[in-house]
Amino acid sequence: MDLAFLCGLFPEHLEQEIIGQSIGRIDFAANNLQWSLVKGLDFHNKKSIKLLNSLYIGAFPNGYKKLNVRTERFSHSAGALDLNIGFCNIIGLKIISRFYSTFYYVNLWAKISSEEKKVLLIYAIHTPFLLTAVLVKKINPNIKLCLIVPDLPQYMSDKNSFIHRILKYLDSIIIRLAIKKIDSFVLLSDFMVEKIDIRLRPWEKIEGIFDNTFISPSSIIEYSNVRKIMYSGNLDISQGILDLLSAFSKIKNNNYRLWFTGHGNALKYIKEASEKDFRISYFENLTKSELQKKQSEVTLLINPLKPIIPKVRYFFPSKTMEYLASGKATLMYKLPSIPLEYYDYLYFFDGETIDDMKDKIVEICEKPSNELDSFGANAKSFILNFKTPIAQTQKLYNMLIKL
Image (cartoon, rainbow, N blue to C red; front, side, top):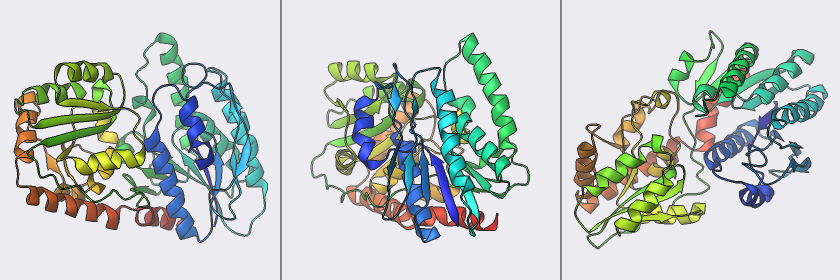
C-alpha cells in the first residue's frame, strides 16, 4: 500500500527547537499519538509510510517565536522519504499559507503513479488538511482518504468573541462539506459518531496508544509512611485541578504529598497552595524520563476531571494509558469515553463532592502496599500487551486494506 500521512508531529531533529521556540503549552500528547500511529503502520505495511508533515505549533507572535517554518526533507526511518512542509506562521496568514503549502506537496505525491493502492491519512479535523485532502482526491479520485479524529473542533477553543464565533461558524461549514468526501475514520470515542456525519462509511475506534519503546522504570518500593499523589498533564481549571487542591487540603495527615507537573491556567493556584502547604509541590518542564521516574515513586496517580463536562464524552484522556503503564494505582472518575475493558485496572471516585474525592484518595492510599503493587502491575501488563502501536493499529490497517 502506498500510504502517506498528512500530519503535524515533531520530527526528532526539530523537537528541541520546537520546544525552545514555543510560547505556552506544547501538545506532546498529540505528538506522541502521531508517532505511535507511524510506528504501528510502518510495521503492518512492511515499509515506511510517507510523512507529509506540517507542524502543529502556535502562531507568531503569541504562540511561537518564529515567523516562518522552513520546508525540509527528513527520514523517520531507514529509506523513508519524508517532508516537513514549511509555511508562514504569522497569526491570520498561517491558515492560508498552511493550506497552499500542504496542497502543493501532497498533490505532488498524489500524481506519482503507483500500482499499489494510494491511501492518505489525515490527522485531526484541521481545515487546511481537510481541504488539501478533498482537492487531491478530486484530482485523483482513486486515492482513499482516512481521517483520524483525536478532538472535535467545537471543544478545542474557549475563545468566545464575536469575530471568533463568526469564523468558527464558517469553518464548521467547510469542515462539514469536506467530511462528506472522507472514505473512512478513526475515532477516539464511540460517542464521536453523534457529532460526525459518518453514516455507513467504515470507522474504527482507537482510544489511544501507548508507545512501549518508553516503558516506565520499575516501581520504587516506598518503605516510609509517606503517601505521594501525582497529577501530570493539562493544568487548566476545567480539568478539576481546584477540586483536587481543595480535597487535598482536607487531608490533615502530614505524611501525604501532592505533586503536579504540566501547564495551564490553574498553575497560579497550585503555586499559591504550595507556598501555604509544604506537602504540595510543582515540577516544571519534566522530560519524559524524569516524569516516568517521578511516577514510579508515587502511591497514587490521579485525574480529577469530572464526567459532567460535556466534552469528556468525546475524548479519551491520554494520561490514562500513561498512568496505567507506570505500574501505579490510578484514580479517576468513570468517564463515558473509558472503554469497559479498562474498568478492572482503575479505581473510581464514588461521588463528585470534595469530601468524596478526599475520602477516596485516603481509602486507596491506606491500602496495603502489596495490594496496590499487584493492582498496578496488572494494569501495566494490560497496557503493554494490548495497547501498543502494533496492537492498536492492526484494526486500522485492516480497515485501510478493505477500502
